Length: 245
Image (cartoon, rainbow, N blue to C red; front, side, top):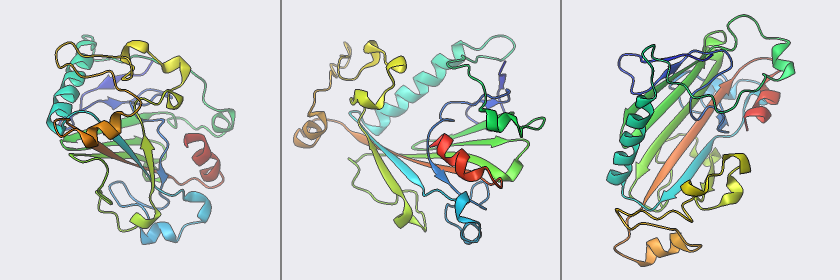
C-alpha cells in the first residue's frame, strides 16, 4: 500500500509506494531527453539525445469563472479537506485505481523501480509538482508547473521558455463531458449542473466563456499548466511516451 508522508519545506505530500503516484501523475505532457530536474525543456543537452527520447512540450490552458484570489481560497480548502483524511500513521492515501504495471515494464523491473516520490511546492499564483523515481534517478522526471493568471488565455509563454515555439497548447473546457471518462463523472461536481447557494455561481451554460467576455461583472482566470516529462531509458523511451500521453 502506498504511504505518504510530509517533508519539511514542501507544501504537499511525498509518495513512496510501489506503483503509486500522487495527483497529476498520469497527465500527459512533454518529454525532455537529457535534461535535469528544474531545467527547461529543449536544452542543448536534450537536442543531442536520440530523437526517440523527445516528445514536444504541452501546456494545458483552463479557463475558470472565478478570480485568482478566490481560486486560492478553494485550493487551500481542498488541501485542508485532504488533510482531514490523514490517519495517526500519516497515510491519508485514497486508492482510486488499482491496476497492474504493464507487462513490458514488469519484465525489466528491478528492485525499487516502482517507488515513486512526489514533492509539491506552492508559491501561489505559481505552483510546481515534481515526481521522481529512486531507481532511475536523473533519467526520470515528471514536472507540472502552473501559473494562475487573471486573463482569458491571452498571454503567451508565461513560463518563459526558450523553446516556446515548440510548445503545444491544449485548451480544456471544464464543462465538456467528452473530456471526462464515464467512470470519473460525478453529476454533483458537473459545472454545467452545479449551482452555488452561497455565491449564486452556476450552472455554466454552453456559452459561458463568451459570457465572461461580454459581462464586465464576471470574474475569470486562466490556469497555464506546463507538463514536462523526462524518460531516458534506451529502448523504452518512445513506448513509454505513448503510454503516458
